[in-house]
Amino acid sequence: MKSETDFVNFLRKIKTFDKNIIKGIGDDCAIIKFNSKKNYVITSDTSLLGPHFTRDYTPEEIGHKVLATNLSDIASMGCAPLYALYDITIPKMSETWIKKFFTGTKKLLNHHKVSIIGGDTTKGPLSISITLIGVQKNSILTRSGAKIGQDIYVTGNIGNARAALILNKNTLGHKYFRKYLVKPTPRVDVGIELSKFASSCVDISDGLVKDLKNIAMSSKKGFEVDIDSIPLDHNFNKYVKHQFREECILGGGEDYELCFTADNKYASKIRKISANHDLKITKIGIIKKSNFRYYSNNQIYHPKECGFDHFNSK
Image 1 (cartoon, rainbow, N blue to C red):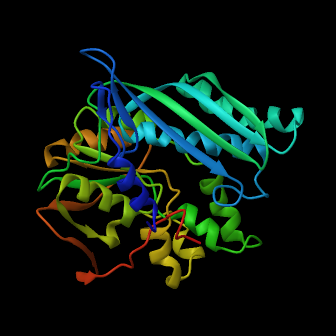
Image 2: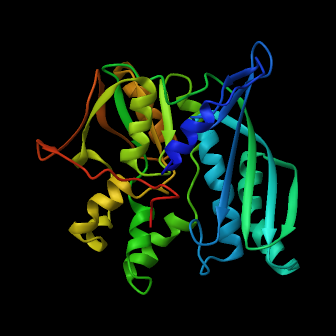
């Protein structure tokens, strides 16, 4: 057992007992049957000092990011978040830090109408775990619904968060991209609209190569992707050197944009959603029967096997 994937595959072999579990381990959320018309989705994420945020983060930025990353999982399922449970480990009880932390959290809680219903607190190295419960609004999106011939899309720009990480903190480039790293925007409202017709979805938290591969593997399909069509910030080429392009665009992670598949007949609906939310939604490829192929300048491109893994990433 060497990676997160190995660990997840191990957990999948453990027997479950409740017939109301529609989908368990292996997607962005578990799906639990609520009644004949509605289902709940449940996700949980842990954020630690070091891998997920650094000492230069303000308490407000930490509060925003740890909730935003959880909301992104709900967004990728096309569902609406309802309830949150916070498990917080802190070195000492600091009223000032806690108030600032929840100042960063409240904006997202209020915008998405999420209620904190419980959790736990303890003393120790800084760590925040959040469990979110959401509810089905239309169809629930999973990673396993992609079909041959469907288009592959991404929301927003890709590579911004990784650009902030690789650029020196004293540079203008880092200062420009830092906001995308510390204050990602979970695409909850967009995910709900996409759930009316999209066939599969994943949030780009671990890098486009890894997350799109998750869709393909879960759907038992292949794909072709045009790297040159992947949307970038208008300042990306200004600040990011060529040797770091692949790392940022294909392997960086932490963008928390959505990657989804849909039939071509929905292209006009996707353009309308894009306009309504003032958000880029870009076609980058197509689902195929088998094989994972990337192209650049009309030539086959072989990206490195990349993507974030807690046990194998720097």
